[in-house]
Length: 177
Image 1 (cartoon, rainbow, N blue to C red):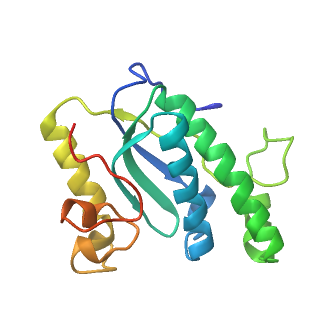
Image 2: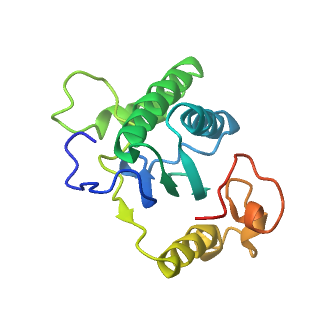
């Protein structure tokens, strides 16, 4: 995870994680950028045994509860791949303002790249009980409600709240743990 101060001591167990865009820049306002996120997660479901228990994508960050054969490695791969793909998309689409921001706010120690998409780290929290799992799932699903974007969590397209309400979502979600 690079220079992150967070450590994962039980890499095969479910963790609550947050991935935030550098300086909270609103990147996930286009279907193309969220498609990159979902395609990467689907790939990791096949290659890394990634299990997603809950997720939400908002305009500048995402939360998820997930496990894999090595969740730290999976999340490193996820962030590297999605950063490269999203920056390529922004270049191709000539989105200069956001690219300039990603360059301006890039950390000084990142000398081998022009842009930085993600903030460092994922702030992993090991899910230690059923109560904690339920609390974190509810937090994730209610994030867009709390922000005032919607009135009901199942209305948010980029969330697993629909899966928990019996409606097929955009990606496979494990509802048993």
